[in-house]
Image (tube, rainbow, N blue to C red; front, side, top):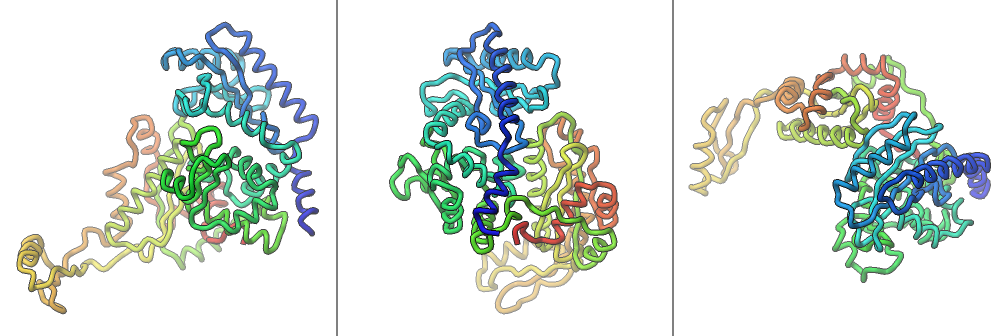
Length: 459
């Protein structure tokens, strides 16, 4: 299949139909009209996001509606008014209070996921009073720069990045938002050119469409592998959420696509999870331990992904501090009941004693300090190659004991509500525990099978 055929096939699947577009515009207009009819200090109501720019994908039912307030409004009044209006809009529908930089209301209306976000009406994105004040400027900029013929190019690039798991600025994805995808098409003209450019990206890249910075200045200011200078706010890198791993994955996927184009890059293949017998066989060849904690009720997924990643880093640090070899790790949550961090080690048990090499004997001060600090020895001190050498007993020779003690002390969280929720299922998973979870949870089966394969989606 040639590239043009691939693109036609992808666009047929991802482009919303006229019927869908009509329904989206109708519900957006109804909500905006309702907000405008509510008495209050708000000045304007704006539909933002990819739906406003008609670059969204088929099945995306997100409506981002911004309610603009005058700059003179205090932060307390601003938040109170934003929540009041949001609650009125959702009367009779399911909703919840969510938090970004400030609280807002989100919920579901007639099958659409709607966010009612308060924002200040400022004259420039560089004069913002809250982080979300930029969004209306983003919509205006893209509408002014993106040709109608380029919308399909944005959809192709957006779906490509989704297919290779490199889309979304949330903590789980650590990738790029839709706004960056639109800017890439504005910069490079179309999907083909964008993919060719990504395939040639180096360790550090700068995209500065408006030319705000001289060569080297943007990298110095933002210190990131990919800098996409916000055209409406020169002080912001809109690709800041992109991790180095995801940045590298984008490059590798683009190269692989150019080498052998396929529809599979756009729609990742659903791999069948391994059978239990196969998992047991693979676990017999590896040393894997897990940590499971509960998922607190009513906390946003992005917040809990942040907590899970922090917990994963804490546990990994504890493993390495105690001289266990950490080969790799990963995290998973069903975003409802449980969160799991997986750690693959060189060995789960170590020799009970460990050797420590001290300073050179000729360095009198350091030698005296070293010998004074280490009194409880299994063997030594002795001299090898001109240095003091001792043998001491390890505090932890078994990783399961280490992690059980660590979880008892830490529990990994700060806030009381989260702590209670996470402690609910707090336990260390050995091979038996991993198999039990694998048997009963389909989401974990998919995650753990892909972890055991250890292979990129596009390879």
